[in-house]
Length: 204
Image (cartoon, rainbow, N blue to C red; front, side, top):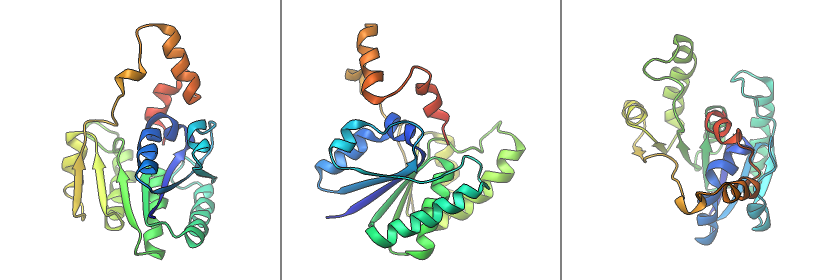
């Protein structure tokens, strides 16, 4: 049985985007665990299916000291669990999750890019901070999955063999109904408030 570790900066990203992905892997016989800073209760369905959640102290500041502690905890988790695949999401978690490859070179690393912070029209500061980091981190990445043409073309310039583009994270139209009651039930099921749909998209 292959083991997969999902790494995100905050737990709301799991609730908003990753539940169907994780459930699919579970059905295919994978063992899946998650590491993140728990800012919202994790989807109950995943917990009931036995998905273990590690609460680690990621900071949204790339240079935050909490990230160093988080990385040390990731190293200890990998030593104990020996994951085959580490699938990272959001910029901060993606950095430290992929750094595991320096200590554990046999890990397969996948980075799903929910939007590079450097893009046409982005601030110079974003380019100065994030572009060189991502260019370097590509050498520790086996697969990059992008969600728009600009990110896809940018990733192709990095030192990485496999780059893919998908049209967004996907949307299950059956989960949305025309009446407000169904939408309220959906929010309750995933533990999300109305504003969380927007916040989750920009969470780092």
